[in-house]
Length: 335
Ligand SMILES: Nc1ncnc2c1ncn2[C@@H]1O[C@H](COP(=O)(O)OP(=O)(O)OP(=O)(O)O)[C@@H](O)[C@H]1O
Image 1 (cartoon, protein in one colour):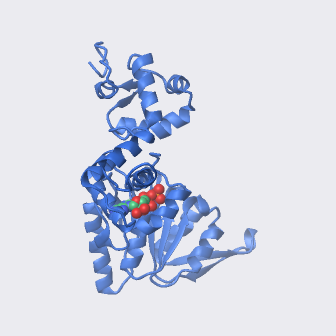
Image 2: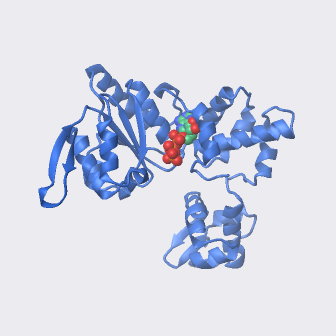
Image 3: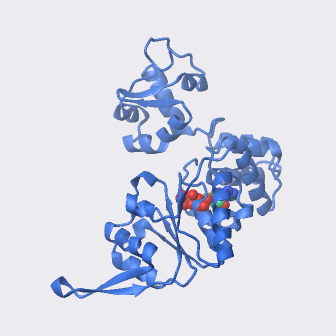
């Protein structure tokens, strides 16, 4: 329910909710300002804009921004992703089909295979690919020049990007989590597009629990709509929001059942920790990887849990959130 990654249902629903132009894009003021400068300058010069890297966690609008960039420069958008390009030949095929002014969106660009990455360096810098013909000592590289195009790379792990690739982008836009007020605007806009009216207090409740992520906000809105239609009055009001969020076990901080059971185990069974990841995972009946990748990042971000060399530790805020009193032991985080 609160995963920031998209599933099939999200993808189908999201298409209708994506802002199409930069002016419609809510939040991310710094990124919007940087992009509008780069795109306006490119348009004024009649040139394709510099390559852009979009860095940030999933669900914050990287794909949406890539589509907006293409729309703003009147270019066609070609989409691919790092894992989809297994061989340099795959990338050569994509690059050689590009037209002047196209925008090539490469999602998860940090997962490109090495040979493809090297081919991309040359394509981004010199608008050229070397097509290798033949094998062994007789192989020759035939240079093929490409029309000017713009690469928009998206990554959730900009630290994994090799420096030579990072350097080929004209700039990197760092996307941040959205504020509650921004998410309320996203929700009001989505409701309008869905032909529904969303009460302000309902928007505030949903926004507060959406983990700073528009994708999650839109998903929760759909569940509130379901509740209103099936069990409520049809209105997207405060009562519908509260009831739907309760059905789906999303609490006031945006924690779901797994998050809470991890915290509860840490606080109640291990006295707040430190507890090792595996021990904690066994206590909640999950795989260590699930606890580490699904629950932990948000708990740490919210200041409810800390990772220390001795193991996971619950903070005073975690005890308070669960309505427990924190043990008073010197040397621990809640002291
Ligand atoms: N600034 C925004 N204003 C309004 N809606 C937004 C905004 N950013 C994202 N959204 C909505 O959130 C959803 C997810 O956005 P998007 O697919 O662009 O995220 P992403 O960062 O590319 O995620 P991923 O990396 O997981 O693909 C879209 O449906 C889009 O409508």
